[in-house]
Image (cartoon, rainbow, N blue to C red; front, side, top):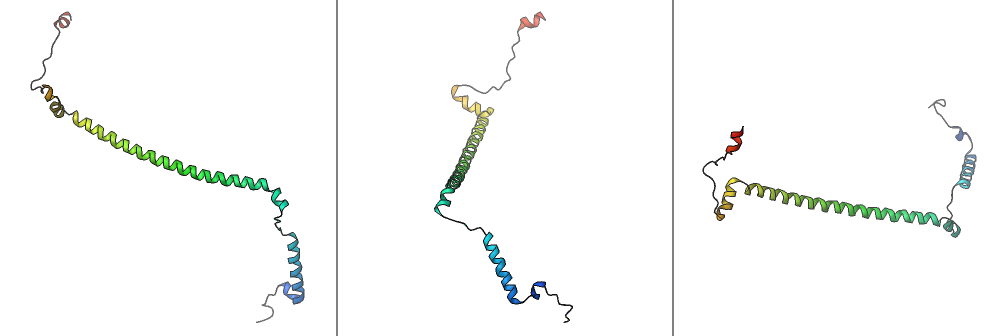
Amino acid sequence: MKEKDQHIPAEHDAAPEEVNAAAKASVKAAGKHRWKPRMGYRWIMKNVTFFLFLAALAVIYIYNGHYADKIVRDINRTNKELKELQYEYKTLKSEVMFRSKQSELAKAVEPFGLKELTRPPVVLIDSTITASN
């Protein structure tokens, strides 16, 4: 390969010792500004209210989960009861419809001595009303 075709970054122009020294200096500078947690007694006491707040949030979160589960169980139980009542309603309605048929009514009143009419009913007309018109 020709020397023109090769691209070498500017860092590689310096000697290896200089590159290592520059890298160490940049790591050292970055270390000064890096955040280091201090878990001392004073830091804990300073942030105890925040820890209590987090604990309260955790309790509320757990309570909310249990409450939601309870509501779902109640909804499912109520839906089950509703379906049972709908089945009972439909059963009773069909029974009433069956018993209100003319043939079933005739069978039901037969022990009382009532019989089904075989002739059409007689229409009574009030003669005083028709005479005055």
